[in-house]
Image (cartoon, rainbow, N blue to C red; front, side, top):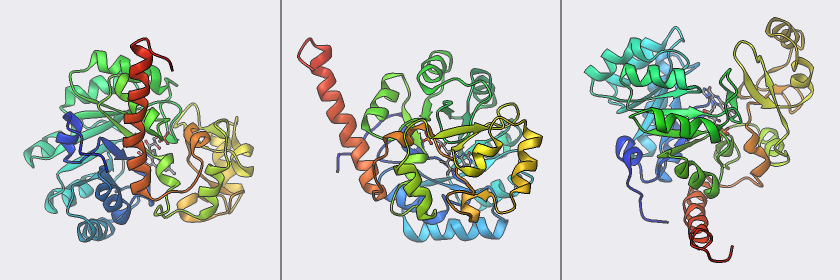
Length: 319
Ligand SMILES: Cc1cc2nc3c(=O)[nH]c(=O)nc-3n(C[C@H](O)[C@H](O)[C@H](O)COP(=O)(O)O)c2cc1C
């Protein structure tokens, strides 16, 4: 393994490499967070959909599997957000990762407890507000990402440098990253870390059905579709059920999904035809299922080898 990197993000989060697990509801729980942290990245438990007892259990599982730091994602609009934050503070979590709403309402409690906070954004406006609220870093998600994405449709390649220029706090790039070239490109754009979601789904340890991993591996980069464009856009794999609702307005899409009966979020079951599978365009670059530590070490060594070959191009050598 490469020797640990040292930059503002590794120091903020306490990890070896600035590669962060994207939170995924009912998927990135205690075990997955520990596996990512043990591989040198920063694991994140998604608190969304967990009761107080569930979250306590997942934190204990993570603690039993790693001595390294990991974080907890709290979507702030959820009714149990305050309760999840309370659990994090009580159980000594050092980094909370807020999303889906303004972090301002929890900032006093977070800072009083001495926690660090990163916040997910998808636009300049959200990023400026998060900085004013006092977050330590933003995770900026481009439109090519899997899962819920911004309404403004700005891609990672344009969002990251704009935020880096405008903000004083570090930026973590998210959306479309799944290998060493992507990691290096994000750093070149001014990000100081990356978040990965779709690439993490196709790891051996990821607790999703095999058909989901197979579907991603077999997909090209045009295999996704964005649902709910006007309200809460979400990028998912195209299949029978999502093709049916694509292009409908949100209410009609909700009715269509409800009428489908067995259509549901992939972590709750379903089949390759009926499950709603959040997935980013980076699916087109993912060729197989690998263990988490192989994914992370491949990104780190890959970034170095791309850098070396770029060095010769930029210095006038041959590609
Ligand atoms: C299967 C799946 C489920 C996700 N669920 C959530 C979620 O519950 N909350 C959240 O903030 N982001 C969620 N995301 C987004 C990821 O946290 C991450 O931001 C995104 O996947 C990064 O883009 P990428 O897929 O191109 O790597 C999900 C992504 C995927 C692929």
